[in-house]
Length: 572
Image 1 (cartoon, rainbow, N blue to C red):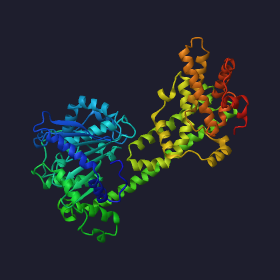
Image 2: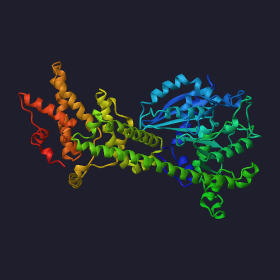
Image 3: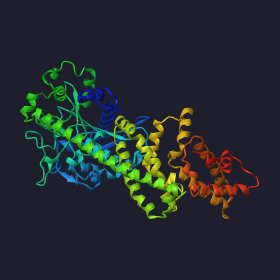
Image 4: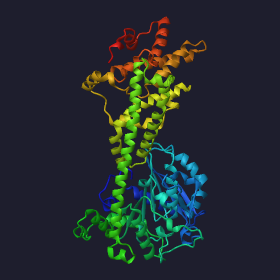
């Protein structure tokens, strides 16, 4: 599902979902798990399936007793420390359905092991479940998303079938809404199980019940004999679930979702529907009305359940406008802040060059208050970009690709400007092997996305780079980490305690470093600042030159000739 593009209507998205194999595969595994048992030995059971070499499905099913004979208090919303990570500045607490939380907690030890197992997989990961098994699947998916423990190209997508609501406002405002699809038949009372729907099925609750706080989250795929449509507006979904719960109260919960999916695939979903667009001048209103009629909810029926769809649509439009304006204002403030901080570091870089040192070594040496004050700007920028990268990881693939294109240049400039400061701090504190032991994941991802989007330079591009090399940032943001490791190798070679094995390894590393640096120079990919007299690179050269001059077999290379002939004075 994270490959689904953007759609103009819920019917269009609904049709694509029906046409895809993902939803069928998910239900097939649920059905297979249900077939394997006549009576569950425990209230909920799960199984991992390898649907294909690149698709793993984790299915959850619950015992029918969980919804047919719910215990008192199971409809309550209760807080849980396990899901405190969902709290935000706006929503200080998040409450979860007691029944779903009880089932999830009972499986906690097993699911902890499964969570560890899934961090190693590649490809698509589908978490799915039916009824209260779907509720557990949703909680498990949220648990997986917390902390970004999965591999970058393996983001979980959750598909539930006939699952009750599991949380309140705090869950509704989760940043991971786009990772959830809830399939609901208009003949299934279970999704509205815990709603106070009057004639609907309800459960006895304690005196402290909070059932009125339930809110849907994610996208809802609503289906009927007439067709299907997708909705993600919580208040509208809540109203529709109440209508369904009321109309099918006391009916069977054994809805054949497999049959529903087959029926939807076999029919022309949108043929024969009223052309409601002719009745509305506003395309937005026409689209919502048509989507509702597609799944059997006309305006007359909704009014019978006290749902004024025109008022709902007006509210949806107003909230969309407010959100758009809020996002624009927030983005503008953040952009101004990062521009200010980047300007401060650029100024620091320029002033450091005058000292014949370079900003990398000035920051590493911390010789003045000016060097220390840069830490604040570095911290601000790092927090901003870590958050941006985290947001991008949580977005569907197509939306994320647009985001990447929009921010690629700014993210690359940030990485090339600020990561050297991180490297300086790492080695100042005595670290070794920054790339493997100290590099932040957000730098790795920014570099990966840049390399995926940018082609190698042509000959004409190299000529252009040569003309501008005096003002560039070093392209490899880990350049100074390579320099520091080369310095350590030189120091080890000169050490009396250096073993033959260590000496050979250090020498091999230095030869590779020579080749790396010369390649960067030939591609005009390093800033001339590396050749400033007090820079760490020139410190390395001093150590290395002294070492190779003492070797019995004189070592020659393009970089050695470049440095000994002082050709770097003409570079840039």
